[in-house]
Image 1 (spheres, rainbow, N blue to C red):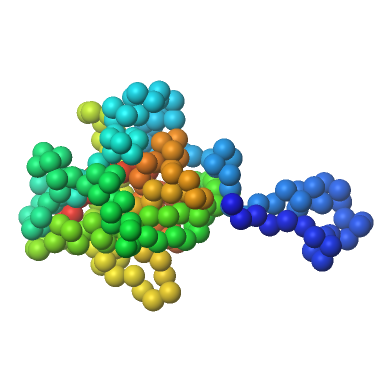
Image 2 (cartoon, one colour; image 1 turned 90 degrees about the vertical axis):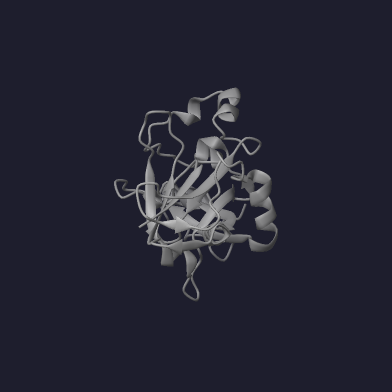
Length: 219
């Protein structure tokens, strides 16, 4: 973990308020996992689930999978949908295979539109979401991509969306939208949105949906 500390060249003047000196000495650029604040907007209660339930709900690498499908309520067409019903949804191993050639790492602060302070600052590692979109080969009437959070049966999923072009085309000097599987060098625990979550660079946390099992392409 990278951190910022005090040395003889950066130490505050001797007459600085002792409380300020203590606060500066404790500064860290990246937030340790045990200090990262998490907001469960979907009210899933995942942070309180026992390990066996996390496994049952697909919230550990061994049981996680991802569907990438056209919206059944629209006229969107993709050539190679990935779904659990067809037994070709992306597994953890499939994601790791993509990561061998497509890993991206960047730092991103997590903030909320309704919060006064940042939740945490992390180094994220993942696979660009565009790699998954390319696998299904969008063909007709696809303008937007929705990605949904885990949710209990009968409950509307917490979700967000982006224009297809924003996912497929990253401007020079900017980082792509990713499916993240590591946070400050460690696998993302379920309590922090793992095993896989979306991270959207430069956006509020409401765009970076946690516990993602499904991506929907729509018109």
